[in-house]
Image (cartoon, rainbow, N blue to C red; front, side, top):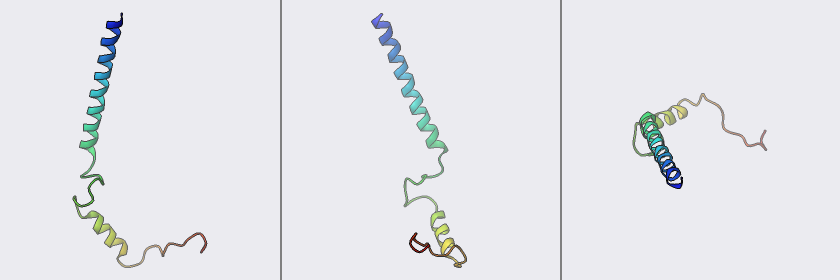
Length: 69
């Protein structure tokens, strides 16, 4: 009986390991670019967004602290 349970448990653990590895691969495939893991590479979209936010100054005013409100 112990041998049967041991073999079954080994198969369950092996199946779980394969499922985890497969999930990690699928997540790695579906994430766009570096997904924030590497700030030096990728496209310049972050810089463009930052420059756009600083652009004409027609956005939201400066942040206020709770004491100023």
